[in-house]
Image (cartoon, rainbow, N blue to C red):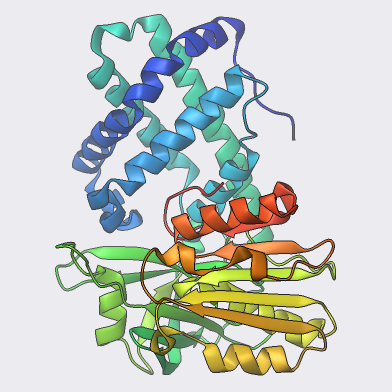
Amino acid sequence: MIEAKLSTGSHDIVRATLPVVRAHATEITGVFYAAMFDAHPELLDLFNQGNQATGAQRGALAAAVVAYADRLTDPDAAPFGPIAERIAHKHVSLGIRADQYPVVGRHLMGAVGTVLGAAVTPAVAAAWDEVYWLLACELIAAEARLYQQAGIDAATVWRRWRVAKRQDEAVDTVSFTLVPDDAGVVPDFVAGQYISVAVDLPDGRRQPRQYSLSQGPGRGSLRITVRRVRGLDGAPDGAVSTHLHEHVHADDTLLVGPPAGETTLRPDGEPVLLLTAGVGITPAAAMLDDIARTDPTRRVVLAHAERHPDRHALRAEMAHLTGGLTDAEQLTWYETGGDRTGRVDIDAIPLPAGVRAYLCGPMPFMSTMRAGLIRRGVPAERIHAEVFGPGMAG
């Protein structure tokens, strides 16, 4: 892919004003979301309002825009491609359309003017508008390719699926096995991907959430494993996870988007480390299931951290799958107090030569584990992190 370039005049302006925009980026995106939702309340159905309330979404958008501008003005900045790929997959899972980008651009540039005031001269506004449209065009093109590969478009993303089975997996964790309600085809997917699930809440809001697929492909169904989010320190409970736990049962239907996600198992036969914590075990379960069915001689190391044995979801299933492999071992840590990330002994985890690591869990956990793997000699490009929510790992 040829990287986009700013025009000469815009390049100099963006480079000069980037420090100011970076310092005010989260404030800008906060103003942006408020203005856009006020003018287009229908877009509320596409955004996780929990992340809006905590500020996680505006922080993630601010970080992405700044990272893109940084890459446009500094060839030594981190590549933006992995971030763009992650955003594109998320957008496709929600049915984002190309014609929605002008709406976003108009309100985002309006927010820049509101926050930075007189500093936003016509030349500055034009330069940052160019940044936005370069980013938008890159995402629109990437999303078009993903829609084409899936054989769908934004208008046909959402389908009704029936809950064929509901199963308790652990404390506050339930699996839902889904089949098409229209008896249609179950789409292909790659182990490690997720689906979006949209539910109509009691207050009338429709809210989407992404859940990893917790079984591999080829089973004639899709399965998600959902941990109920209980609010801590005065925070509210998770609206969608609570609704699924309390109100969705066998033979109910759910509105489901297509499989998406860029952090997927590579079918290259290389040794694999699945390093997870909490409900981050779900994409690893799909990867292990796929390996057990298609490449049972592959070298696999599983390392999982959990608060308590009664919260360890899919434990028996993972043990069964591991037992069917010819070269696999499993390590588990349970919390005994203190920092949740500190209970995993990264130095105790076997690292086969040429291992490729897949991480999933809370952001502090993944950051700590990634640093430990790099310290032990695993190249950064061989460490892949699945991020739940709008954050960025690395």
